[in-house]
Image (spheres, rainbow, N blue to C red):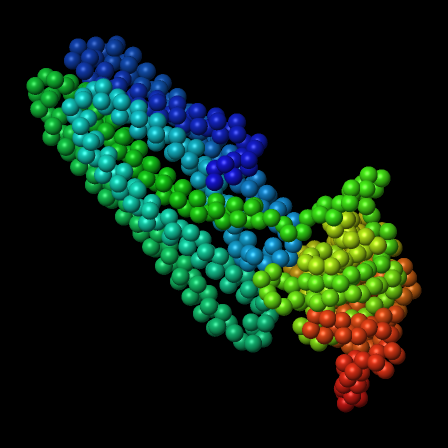
Length: 586
């Protein structure tokens, strides 16, 4: 795990090295202080040599100041290295997630990804900060204090033969018991974050269905599960401390018991016995620090595994999969020449283990500049079909071509720059209307923005807003209606000037008159752009050059409105039912 995460310390390794050096040096100076004190007690005080005492005292003050300075340096350097490491790790995860396909993202819940980017990374950076100090300080203190204690009295040092095995056994037992609990603790944290995310993102639905009590109960159960898991995990950690203190003080009493006769017999001086007490305390405290480190590292390992899962996830859609090795046409320079789209006997399923194909033998050919309508019942795989065009998903069999080339032959940047898609769920971001529209083209002029909004029938309501294009939309576009949000998303897609424009049921929230105006604008303003329109209302696609009828993942029929009225029972039934519904509504 260290080998996997070490690359993310890049840029901060010198701080880690200097911090470790400061921590080790601080421990050494602290260990030397008791020896100087023992010298004062055993030499200066019995001789009544004030000058000697003052000299040695000044040395102790100097050593203490150096030790304090090293401690401050170690704290500063460990903090800087830890924060930098955490920032690198978060950035690496976030950047890697941007490369995920929809299939990759679906392996993790959104709440879990948020937890891994925040909570887990914070735990790892804290572990590095604490590890740079304690993980260095404890072993140096332990080994050095033990060696100095043995050099003072080999007989008294035998107490370690009992104390240390007991402490090590306790540490090993606690780590073994707590390790799986920390993994469960992070999973419970995911569950709590998921409940919060779902509630806040769907707060309008929660309130409209008066489900606040249900949501509170759901959160309470997950929160209680997190609390119970935390209590079990940290309960062992808390119990660890008093047991270790009991062993420590028992050891000190044993040293007093056996040390007093040695002083009386003249085998050990009082100052050295006092120093021995200091060292034995430092040895046992070092073991306690080791215990704390092991608890922290146990949780850090659980977090590191979760972070590594995100970093190790291999995007199943990447650039370069379809390189043909044509030297005169380098892969990275391949731009989409036109908006023609071809599906050559394409098969697709979301789950590779599923026996049934979500798309079955799709053979469809769309010329550049055509307007194509796609209709079909719920679950007929209309959205799935169009998501193969910009490679949001990848076909398992067959070939999808755009501009006459397989989509795998393009970089995703070039392909997706040429394909503009308005999804079923219209998404706007925090900021102004202008800032959201500039997602389509960050260099667009005011005239370009105005033209795109006119084509999408959005300019009419934008001009009524207090600040026009500089009106703040709030989080997720909460300040506009569903229909207005759809039109802004369409304007954003038009501003991109795509070769292929895909509308996935993106005019469902606008009235039929506005829908007709938008389609008319497409014909006049985007004559060379291929328009693919998924719609529930046949009136939205009846003037298309080609209408594709989907049924259970297959193309049931294809043709113009007039042709389908004659040849397609599905199309005719849908049309007649909608016409009858329109008559009743009228």
